[in-house]
Amino acid sequence: MKVIRASVLGYCMGVRRAVEAAEKSLHENELLHKKIFTLGPLIHNPTVLSNLEDRGLKVLTKDTLSLADSSSVVIIRAHGTTPSVMAQLEQACVQIVDATCPRVHLSQKRAAEWSSKGYAVIIAGDRNHGEVTSIIGFAEVNSVPTFVVQNVDEACNLSVPEKCVLIAQTTFSPEEFDKITKLLQSKNDKIVVFNSICSATLERQNALKNMAGHVDGILVIGGRNSANTRRLYDTASAICHAALIENETQIPQEFYAMNTVGITAGASTPDEVIEKTEHKLLLGKN
Image (tube, rainbow, N blue to C red; front, side, top):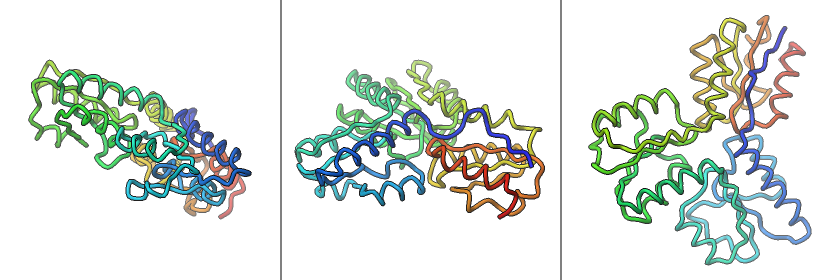
C-alpha cells in the first residue's frame, strides 16, 4: 500500500497556539495547585481534549463562570470570547491567558470599529460557532443590528441594511462565502466586505483537491464537531470514496485493501494522530 499525505494538513497556527498555551499553563502550575480552565472546549478534537483533561484541564461554560476565582487560570480558546464574558473574568480576578487566534481578533476589531460607525454587522458562518458568537459580542457593544447567515438561502431572505459590513467566519466555506457576497452585493452595492476566511482553510482544501486521480480513497482525520474537518470530508467525498475518522482505531476495513490511500486532517488534528493513522495503514491490518 502507498499512503499519500495532503501537502497541507493538521494543526493550524491558531489551534497550535491555543494547545501550547494550555500545555504551558498546566506545566507552570503543577506546583502552584491552581485550577486551570479553558473557556469552552479548547479545540474540536476529542483525543487532545481527553489528554489535557487527564492532566487537570477543565472546561468552563457561560453558565459555570462562577467556578473561576482568583486562584484560577482561564485560557481563552482560539475562537475568542465576548467583551462581556471577558469583563466577568476580570472582575473575578482570574489569571487570563488569551489564546484567541490573531485572525479572529482582527474580525472582532472590525466588528467593533464598523459598528461604532453605525454599520450593521452581517457574519457569514455557523450560527452556534464560538467564533461567530465572539464577533457578535464585539458588534453588540455598540447596539447595532447583527445578523448571521449560514448559507446563500438565508442570505436571500435577509433584508440588507443601508449601512452594513459583511465578515466571514475564518473556517467558513470559500465557495459559499463567494455566493453570499455576490447575493448581498446585488441587494446593496455599498456593503463593506471582509473576506476573513483563514488561508489555512483554503490551503487545506486546495491540497485535498490535488489528490484527485492519485488515490483510491481518502481518510479525513479530525473531530466530528469541527467545521473545517466536516468541509474537508465533503470535498473528499466528491473526489472519491472517503471516510471521516477521529483516530487510527476507526479506519474502515475497506481502506486496507486499497492500493493508494490519501490522508488529510482538520486544523484541530495533532501530528501524533496523523502519524499513528499512517503507520496503521502501512501495517495493513485492522
